[in-house]
Amino acid sequence: MMGLMRLFSLSAYIKIIGLGLGFLNTVLLTRLMTAKEFGSYSFIISMLAILSLPAVMGVPEVLIREVSKYTSLKEHGSLFYLMRWAFFSMLFTLILSCTVLLLCWYFFGERFQGWSVVVVMAIMIFSSVNAVRSAILLGLKKVIAGQVSELAVKPLALFIMLIVLLINGAELNEVEALIWTALATMLSMFVGFVLLWRNMPKLNFPKKSISADLYLSWSRSALPLALISGLYVLNQQLDIVMLGVLSGDADVGIYKVASQMGFFVIFGQQLIRPVVAPRFSEYWSRGKLYDLEKIVVFSGRVSFAIAALVTVIMIVGGEFILSCIFGDEYAKGYAALVVICIGQMINAATGSVGNLLNMCGKELQSLKALVIGLVVNVLASVVLIPILGGLGAAIGTSLSLGVWNLMLWFSVKKNIGINPAIVRVK
Image (cartoon, rainbow, N blue to C red; front, side, top):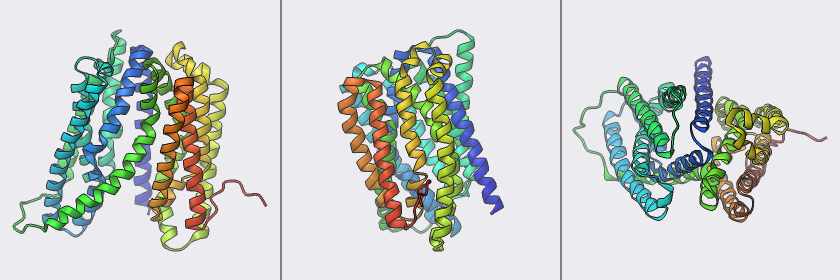
């Protein structure tokens, strides 16, 4: 157990480093680019996250599960065929994603400057390879090696590049920022391959082939997993994409900064989640509902306390913080920042209810809430963004978060049989 807790601690440290570097990179990019150029860059990165979904199509999730199973059983022959299935699946879905990207370029060509579509395609390929490589390492139970490349190496490489550019007085446009991002992603991919090569068991070509049904079962498993992970990504990126389509690039840049600042509200929840998640599964499987409720309420209270403190700071000094760190132009995002913070505080107040349902085998309930939250986000954004711009995107996202988390909260009471409320009224 101590070894497991140490692993969780190291994983949390890597995540903190990655989040910190990601925030610093945003600051540097806003200093190197105009708000309009940064908004265009942010829009393309969000589109890239969505377009990359078909490029992996649930393959990483299947790999984590199956690699872990076959290595524990020492079935290296099945592991070999699993790697081959993953390679050809990724190759096929990458071609599909690149086709979708080219169609987007055809219909939204004004969003892509010069060679940016080629650079975006390169980032998509590097990111997809990284996702598969990371999944293999996680399946091999090499948790740190599986995360360090994407969460630490990539943002650190980009940070160093941007610092050098800032010192030399450079200015970036959308394409140049994408090129530096592609280089950092490529470097993290190479580091990841070194880590995979050092940790991968030796695989010889098996003499006996496997059934075609096994290939089919892997593909069937990938589809629902792709749907769940895809909906999460859509919910995370939808506000930026909708704002980019319905408003201007400058609004996207200002909103992106406000959105990133608002993420600090749930920073405590993000740190607590990997620590409590294994206990959710353990207490549920053993029928210890009292202990389960106790840890859910405790973690929810800690998350909410941190969220409330950060929200107060943002409401009182948010405008000054935006202006001081990012520049006067970004202070226009203060109203959106306040709305985002309130929405994220509701998210923190409900605790890790989504994670709890998943750990207790109630993924379908999470999926239902996620779909409804996504629909609310789309409808609210379509109505509000043309009128209010970035503030409309913030309201849509916060409404979505509220509906989604309240549905999850009631689902926990109904399906798990515990009361996750952080405040008890006698």
